[in-house]
Image (cartoon, rainbow, N blue to C red):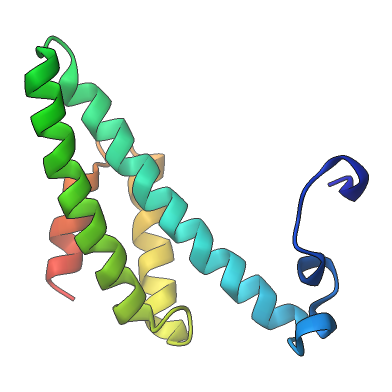
Amino acid sequence: MNPAVSWVYDWVLDPKKIGATQGEVTALLVHEQGHFDLSALAMREFLNEAQGLTNDQADALWKSFQTRLDDLNKLYDSSTQHSQNQANQDLWVQEIKNLKSSQNGTFTALYQWAQNL
């Protein structure tokens, strides 16, 4: 990464500015990547399901995805204690990785998996 042409909080490159260690910042970034990945899985599944739908049908479908995505983000944060519970964070990272790498990996599958935690 070239900081001269990128926007980034300065503490990411120098964690001491906020009294953190590099390990703590890395853990936070891994956790935040999980939130991004949840959204990406939701979008991937939505785009597959929305093909051929009317605008009203697609809007209704997206609202249902948004509701589940909000629920899943809250569950992710509580389960991992915002990355402080390393064992649960590792479980989520692995499950998300498995689903992202599978053509059949869906947001719905992750949602169902998370309900059983």
